[in-house]
Image 1: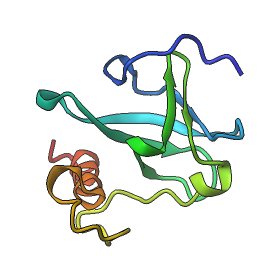
Image 2 (image 1 turned 45 degrees about the horizontal axis):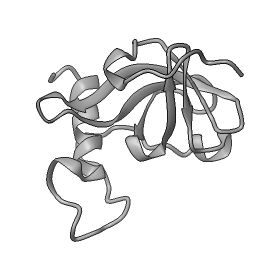
Image 3 (image 1 turned 180 degrees about the horizontal axis):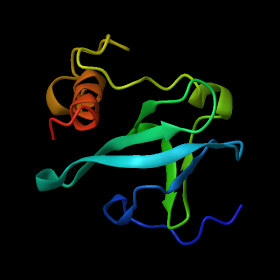
Length: 120
């Protein structure tokens, strides 16, 4: 699969296709989650193309590559189907005492929900 040249998350356009590690189309980008002042890429909100549908949050650690013509996840299609929905009060996915503040998965899910619900 040729996804074009690699790009920064800063150049990633809404609507860009998202693929699982096994090459399956799993959705498209609807929002790039970033702390722009700190130049921190937090992840993506995608519209799922198969399965349950709706918005899903992809943490930056779950993304293998970003290219002009697509985003490649580190997750296969089966695991990509389990990506969490953004929510106003997300459940704890894992609890790490060192993982607090802006970088926690729960905070990222909440900010994704705020974007989807129009608070941003």
